[in-house]
Amino acid sequence: MNTCLAVDLGGTKLAAALVRGGEIIEKHQVETLSSNNPDVLKIALHDLLLPLSSGADVVAVASTGIINNGILTALNPDNLGGLDQFPIQSAIADITGLPTQVINDAQAAAWAEFHAYEAQYANLAFITVSTGVGAGLVLDGKLVTGSRGIAGHAGHVLADPSGPRCGCGRNGCVEAIASGSAIGRAGVPFFGESTTGKDVYSHFLAGDKKAIAIVERSASTIAQLVADLTISLDLDAVVIGGSVGLAENYLSTVKDALSLLPKVYQPTLLPALSGADAGLIGVSLWADTKTK
Ligand code: ADP
Ligand code: BMX
Ligand code: ZN
Image: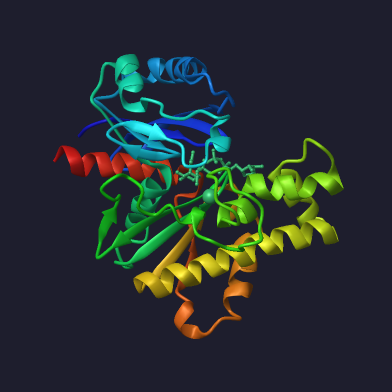
């Protein structure tokens, strides 16, 4: 059985794990350093991956951004400190000396959750509410990555034409309203300059009215996205993940907003069973199917 070195590069966290048969054996995690200098990311990857690579046969990477032919193109460069057009596959293959495959992080997590729910939902979307808002689609039991790696970038569908400008260049995207970064930005006027999404969330849980309004806006925007994906794709289930998506009471707040819509817009709404490891587990399962 192959041991896979699985890597998850997000806008906030960079994680790596040795995975065998869908089980994590060893995992390490660091912060994603925000810099538009590709050397900063290359050094962080080197330091994290080199000690693990001797125990692995293959490398599988789940990364934020559009992944096409091993190149990471940021749809929203703000999420990666302005970094764009990063040759992630060759950078990691050079460090580890191992065959390396890369897909988008939310696509990978969708594949993990399709399996975690034992393939009972053949048509499933995974939505991560994290630094950005990402999505991955499994349709008729197959992971859809798209011919250019773009499939599932539903964080950039329109939520509010008069909403804030998104880092992708469009106004009013779901991500610009609902993501952890957007929640943090919306909290700055009330809680101070360096407020993060996590800070606002703590205020929400403590019952602060401003924070409740911000988190409820995020959750109702995600509920509308769930409805839009369901009515476009005839989904059986939508799985929610990411640090915001998995935070206490977030899923129930999305459920409350979704319950106000007609039944046809309401799929089964579920939490990510693989939790924060969905990207790592999903990409290792996906790499397994590629090497068979
Ligand atoms: P990544 O985007 O790298 O996958 P996360 O899923 O951890 O990373 O998402 C990061 C975002 O989630 C940040 O905006 C952060 O402030 C927010 N966040 C982190 N932990 C929590 C938490 N416990 N509750 C709510 N928000 C959180
Ligand atoms: C953004 C986009 C997606 C990604 C999603 C969640 C970039 C750099 N990323 O919409 O590709 O799937 O964020 O990413 O444009 P995360 O960093 O929040 O996990
Ligand atoms: Zn956008």
